Image 1 (cartoon, one colour):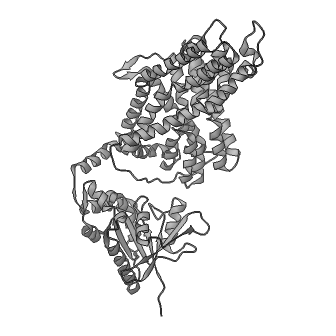
Image 2 (cartoon, one colour; image 1 turned 120 degrees about the vertical axis):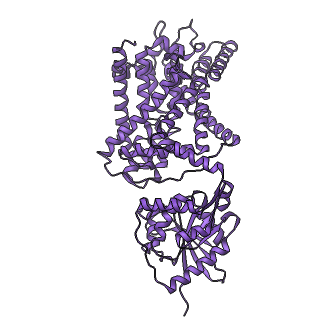
Image 3 (cartoon, one colour; image 1 turned 30 degrees about the vertical axis):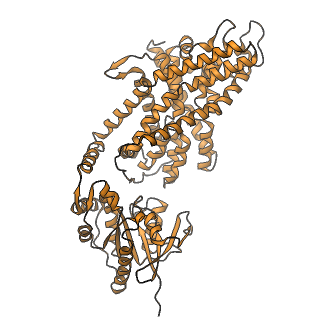
Length: 619
């Protein structure tokens, strides 16, 4: 009588190298489909034992616990327990551990081994652990776990034959003896045991590895870690102004020279006005902030490359839990500092639907890079570039405060939402901490070039088209002699109507006009102001040759400027963000809610800022 084919399942934390091991063991003998009733991918292949007998090998989704917190973890649990439709219970469990992150992976390993099922441990990526100065004794780990431990390097096909043989032996033992579950061990106990087992299994470690461990003790400390994080962010925003100033001044001078050349060689006409007042004054006023964008992303990319960004997410988990969110929400919110669109799309990794919805609704409050030109031009015009301490500039301090205001506002809104329309308990959060490493110059250069190109492409497409459309609306119909062109234009008429509503928050006609096209892209607010002042200049004035900051300082009061900044901290982002929110929530209900509450917050914040500054005599 022939026996049923053996089924083995690869199980482990995410990033343990399961997929690489699965591919090495099965080669091209794979089938990929979805599990019935869910969108989780099912990968199965055929493994040949040393005896020539085939084994069905199933690659299960990465999991941190058998207490499922996501659809992927739920599938893993059901398959292991034999409860998943369309999948028989595995005869053998192959636990894949990352040798370089052994302690964390041993927590889940104990939970799986505790089921008492035939289990083999694949101690994977031992070459990378050794490269990082960590030598592990498989025999010591085998003794501690009570199951076979096989060192493997999947990408080099090392240990595969030994692993296949161990799977066959584990299958044979399972037929001779019934599974005997081990005594239940709590999560804190498993963590303590994981630490002890990892220490006992480590034969040697280099000074470099010990230094990294000590760094984590400081950078991830619950009291020391957050101040270090905020101090680093403070330095970033100081650098955005200090380092970028000479480059921004150079670009601004180049834009002025280009405008002078056009006025010199092209006779007066509407076409020349379009080039000088529309394209050069509008688009050029945004392009000059390229240095600030590059410097900001230099720090972001450096923190990601060194491994610190993941640790920042770990530090923020406690604050996230305090407002009813899990640490899983931090990564999408972090992405939203670059742009809310990928941030909202990244919420797909959040299993809890209310957690995910709350994250989508607050993502636009993260200060995206498109807001930086708006902040920079207003701060440079109205905030003195004076030192308030060693290496601390007043302009960088204000920029830091604006970013903090967005974060704090988002957390307050999340707390309110989780207590009302998206009420629910926060889920747990576990994440993989990457190794510390120095960033490569090549990778940084490529990343900065990509960000700079995205910014310039927006300036050459969206901002260019919106600026041209605004110039046309500002120039037609043409004003009668002695009449103000802006007031006579279509755009001026719209702005004058809107300014009635916005006057209580300190907005004049030009400010009201700027926020309309800014819905297409936040940076357009800058080009809108530059184009408006260029078009509104009298014949004997050459406003295109005057820096936008100087024009704002001459036309606005400080309370007006602060009100404008407060508006942009909370106002909804571009229309593309709204469209993505509609797609991710399958309707207009929640995007409409998001628009309503963000506009209300922006209005209230601008109102409070304007009248507080006025009462303090700042105007």
